[in-house]
Image (cartoon, rainbow, N blue to C red):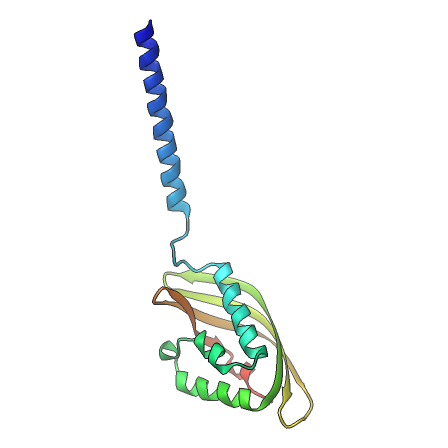
Length: 156
């Protein structure tokens, strides 16, 4: 009788251990990949973009972009430099609308509102547009590789 109880106990322990290992493996496979694009990453990029615009920091702004992967990256850099040099202050609100990702590329749709006071003291301009950002995983870090329409970052 004792032998049967001992065998039953060992069998129960083995089943419990097997179920625990299976559950752990399932949980591990359901976790997103370490560098997978998430809404949290998109929100962080948008927050940093907003802070760089409102803080009038070209350095922080360009740090978010991978200009080498961007079509016409040097032209975009010139456009942004001109935009910053022509503005006294920038107030922006970026609202994450949706994201999608496939592999090392992601798309971020953003409802953007911006109010810009020109440096020359003219009237403030306001705009509201849907922006689409493209992001890529570059060296384990997500960076922006495109934004459309680029005209959003220019004075009227």
